[in-house]
Length: 341
Image 1: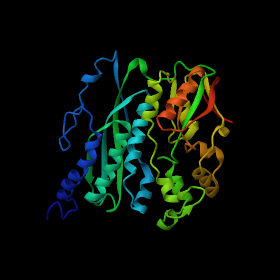
Image 2: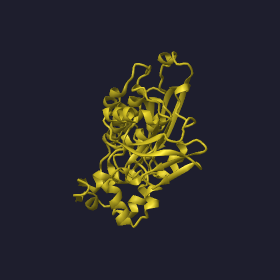
Image 3: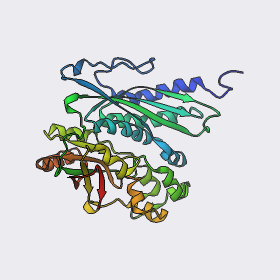
Image 4: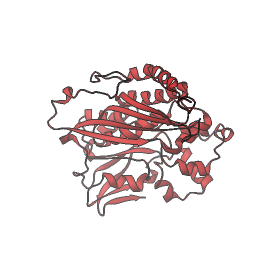
């Protein structure tokens, strides 16, 4: 008896690392001091000494049951983008610049090419957010996961000068809410998605005119990464007063997290076109509108609050970063919370 006969292939692990390296290489930053394969990743903070009060911000998350679609469609090169996005978008929400990322892949059997495919998506997400992929772990766990399944999670660290933290404390009535478009369902609510749509390859490969793509492609569309858009706003000289990443819990749970006491967000549902995938999901699942807004992003992946005088400049900066932005509401005095009207 040996480890391989027990289900863990050490040689496959070595091959996975070798295949990953070409993808990881494109995420490197000058501050990275170590090579892939070491026991830890080292990142120099020398560059940030000029900040008055350098403050670390962090985020951790996974992809959730969206992975089930990747298994069915045998498409594994985009879920890594989702994993990075869920972490770095939270860091950007605080005004932070993502610095580095680490991933964790647990699988039933290590297929090196599949692992490298997953990591290629992680590397792409890191490249989109200018974060270095400085380490990770691939755990082969036979008997715990089915051979053809895996889980994927990650952890990111960023930095911000304390004075530039986005906290919502200076919000005032009249401030304007801008919504940055999502790419679709992103990475939340897939337990409900999987109850509404048949989780079979034939059904997921069906083309729908209203989607402009197959159902599977629409659902697997990777989560938008908003780091560059928020950086563009800052570089345009606009101060973001508050920011909310619309993830699990939709509008009702996430928007109040950006508010200070005595401030209420009022969002106009007709201020933008809700993407077809959400209309299709609501109709086929007979899901009430309130539940949709309490579960999904409904086409808005990030909400930012700015002073009315800065609206046009902020919109121009977001569009210059390649994103679509809508003026979706405003801040009013009142009980802390959100009103959708």
